[in-house]
Amino acid sequence: MKIAILGRGTVGSGVDKIIADGQTPFLKSLSVKSIFVRENKINLDPRNTANYADILNDPDIDLVVETLGGLEPSHSMIVEALNHGKNVVTANKAVVARHIQEFTQLARENNVKFYFESAVGGGIPWIINLERALRIDEIDSIHGIFNGTSNFILDQMTKTGASFDSVLAEAQKLGYAEADSSADIDGYDIENKLCISADIAYNTVVEPGADLLKFGIRNITAADIAYFKEHGWVVKLLGRSFRRVDQFNFVVEPTLFAPGQIEAGVHDNYNYVGLRGTTIGKLTFNGQGAGMLPTAHALVQDIIDIQVQNDHLDRRFDKQLNLDNSTKIMDYIVRTDADLAPLLPDYKVTVDGNYWLVKQINTELIHQTVAKLSGKPFFACINGGAKHESR
Ligand code: HSE
Image (cartoon, rainbow, N blue to C red; front, top):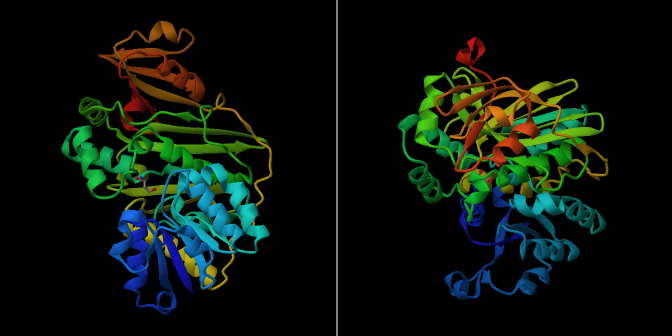
């Protein structure tokens, strides 16, 4: 099968490398015929072109791998590829989260495939297993550590006491971070990945947007990490969503685990993602969530699935669900110099320096309350921890 790659950054180069180095029969039957690059890069490789029509109108090319990232021109280029009868695989979670229904419908109409395994969980075979579980089960919960960069940052800060900025720079050097790293540290990348997962799990469309609660790790300090450690907690940036009948909740927020919990042991650029299904119960996956070769591996798996006609689940995304973030009740730790007690008169609030413990509050209210605080507050949901139980 002859393919074209759009973009020659970290992930596009990874796909080219895996196919070029390929020793398995699957890989030997693939070849990269064209690579779409900027005008000034054309001369670097005879396969390079800056003219997309060369790819669209080449009848030899069966499949387009989109690794440009961002919304445009990726969205238009995927639409054009599908309309020209090319299969498309992509790692671009931002564009998939916003156009999943359109792309899937266009692929169906043009009798080609549109797959996006690498868009969520990097190298983890997550989408395929979510779909596999759905062949039998209803899925009512998806949760996990969906971002390699933020996990790397929190892990390094916890292990070495390093500053946020120095670890972020390292994650960028290692090719984990997005071009705009705010996607990684403010929760937008996890939002995209949780939207895609929820779309599939609930057969609906969850649009990224302000009504989906998000709080990232931009404000975390070495002192916060030290405070959590002292109290027997490890902090992780988590995405989670639950569905009950026709309602679902959706949140991205820092979360505290006891050192013995599995999440606490997820290190470096790894992700840990899971689902809960009717008969399978809790099912989780662990693997590298970011980086050139793990992400490219998942893209090439999609290519091979198309080549061997291993069809993925046919999805319509046509269920209507309502978002409700007021029903999940948890305990939270908030770091702020402000007096939190008058802001939450109906809740049990205790203070320890500038760290406040808020008992049994709903997700929406704690997010709204912290959004009103000035300075650089930080907060985290308490998921476990021995010290917490005794407070
Ligand atoms: N920036 C993303 C992450 C890349 O760190 O998880 C993989 O989606």
